[in-house]
Image (cartoon, rainbow, N blue to C red; front, side, top):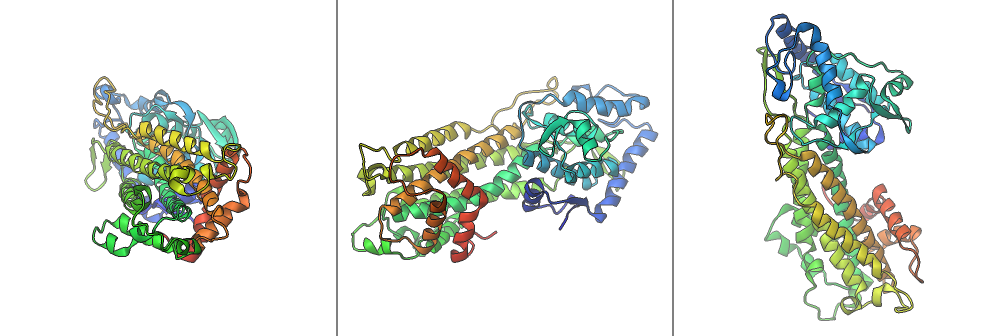
Length: 510
């Protein structure tokens, strides 16, 4: 199947399929006429001698400077070159591929005034596996993600740097190796390529997709911990959640009930008299559920943004208007990504508290630090330190970027969103969260092994078996970093979720 873009119907799953798995892209037939009509408006405006921002004027604070007809094409090339000032490590290839897809999709809406050939060239670059090298730092998230998108556009005109078949080379060589030619920009086309929120939105789309998967891992890891700690299932009672009725909480509690079928471990402490557990166990549906609600909210923001026209000026073919506005402002994404970062941090916060309970013999009822030779061996003592460090790092990263603003372009652009910083932070937080959950998986499976021969609930035994195929039970002290990495690889593949859901059904509805 091919993803046909029309500026209206792209999904986050489409972005993932194209960005990570190389799914091909084409322009929907229905979008072609609108693209051509908007270009005709620009051509007519030039013929009529109308003054149009970004077409025959300078940019930002230089908008009052008129540009002569013979320099209109040079203006656009100069724009791309001058705005390519990003620094730092390049974005991952999947983020840049998502960025190209989203920019092409926005242009197909037909409000950008560019030629069809420009969109086609973007798609050819994407389908051929030419990925521009785009530095991560340099955008303030308003007037679009100017610097990152300029680096993307550089390769389109045969400049800059790109990855092709795993090799980094200059942009022109990458195009030649892929059998492509650079495009010569005409009036309006440079500004249309770089005025948009696609870098922050690409990071956002991929992070939201991964976050929804991570919630499932968080629920499975929690359930393993509850079994290992011989906690009560009373807090999952459907009646409790029905009378609060937050969607995320209700969905998480339902999923946990599916994971925590009755088990030998549960039966072994049925008469222990325990009334309630600590909050990290008892309140897991409420905490994880609130994060899930947040992720779903951010998902809705991203889904709106990926099908929006975000450049400036915008062209309205119906009446020939060319109107300057502020759709490039990243505030909707900035606020959402800051919110996402906070919500993701909480998944790790509560997970680390369970890790602490698992390794602490005063709380767990298990051997100290999950080893039978405490003192001679340290077991999983320091794994909790790592989780604590990651959680504390997230507390710093979760400080919102969107509350900051700094004027640019000689104060013409006097309020900016910092949305790209917010998106990058949320992505970094998610990586830390995944590592914390991997540590919980490691500790919880060890805890269950220490309760042998008693068995956990069937879905959890499946999860434990998958982990044990890569990570054996800890019998003597060994280097645990590779174990965490192997569990992370299982999480990345989605194999734990896939096999568990064969028993439980989908843990969360799509």
